[in-house]
Image (cartoon, rainbow, N blue to C red; front, side):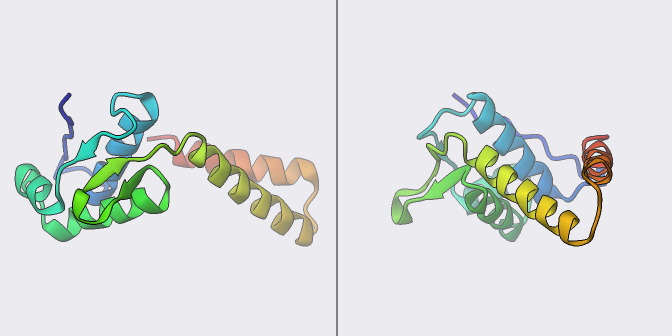
Length: 124
């Protein structure tokens, strides 16, 4: 199994975000199985022609999302996160719903605004 990542320097999306997105999608789809060992930050940065800080930033974001886990000197691995993304998204949705209610929005208006936001983010 080989980790396949393509970073487009001409993209409007930051390189760390391209890296984060691709690793996350590959882990979620099963292309990268649970327990797959990711390259070291320095090695991966060198391989991709990126700064080590760029790869480190992507790894930190992935770890915060529960997609990967760092095991000290043993390395960084795809986490057995299961439905971590669903749980995090549900918590964010609940926070949004509570805030919309406090603001006095109707349920229909809150849903409409949420759909607009999702549509805007997933348009790319």
